[in-house]
Amino acid sequence: MKEQLVTKKILNWYDLNKRPLPWRKNVSLQKRQYYTLVSEFMLQQTQVATVIPYFNKFIKKIPNLKNLAKINNKKLFKLWEGLGYYSRARNLKKTAQLVYKKFNGRIPDNYENLLSLPGVGYYTASAILAIAFNKPYIPLDGNIERVLKRYLYLKKEKDIHKDNLKDKKSIFGLSSRSSDYAQALMELGALICKTNHPLCDQCPILSGCKSFKKKDFVLTKNIKKNIDKYFILKVYKKNQKYLLIKNTKFNFLKNLTIFPMEELPKPKNFDKNLNFKMSNMNMNIKIEYLKNSENFQSPYWVNEKKLDNYMLPSFTKKIVKFLESN
View 1: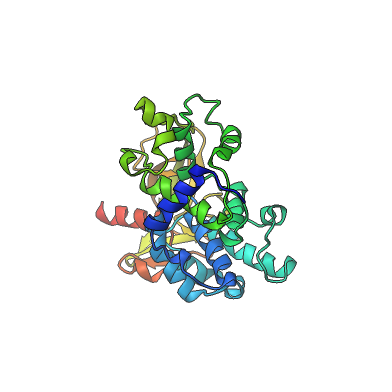
View 2 (view 1 turned 60 degrees about the vertical axis):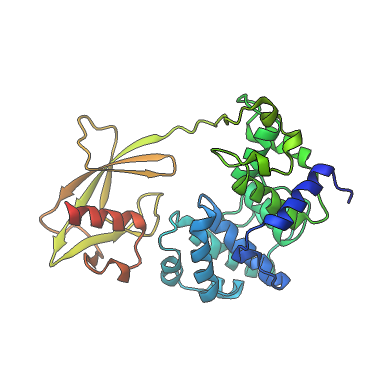
């Protein structure tokens, strides 16, 4: 595969500057595929620095796909605790089970089959094909999008639409080192073409960058509307323990342990005690203290002083800490 000059420049820069990330270790092909799968699920909506310690702990406890397919949810969620977006952990396990059921224990190496796996969309499938299988795909993550927008000076709303970016990424060319090249483009966005204050003097493709020529690095953002939602959060405390329940009602934090909650449709004069941002949801929460717990089936009781002993989402832990400090 003949490589463009821009491709060679980016790969040369990567060879000299890439970070020693744990999922980039020189391991067997099977392990590389597993490491890629796990890291890509963890990296969805989460920064690299946050993921590294979780990945290391996860791989130590669940070293391969077979172990992942069989692990019980309690242990899985405990390892995931603090990463948030727990649906990723559930989908990762379901994916491992499906790989054994449908694909003889081997992660599929084609686009159609990857997209049939839970939690695997356009980006994750492209990343797995490129990084794990060295196939000529460029996964369009936030870092690569940023490089592309600046390199081509894409400013208009139609220009930064996903479909247009997918077409325009061909400007970067392809490489016989597809695995390295996908990671090199991501690394370029993460380390050099930063959201604020890009390090242009260190950029290997500076000479062709239209944003640099115009000295305009401001990015046009896709406006994602936040949805306001309102909840009553019910608190019952007894003997230094809080009553919690398993969430089977709400799509967020599904099947995890939370305080009993009730959603209110556009209430008037809502006097909130807490506010949380979860994805594009703006959660306005009013606390209501209960005098009895008879209406709750199968309650969980957690000791306020021993939160680390329980498998709890960060959302629940933060509420306990708020209650204790107020």
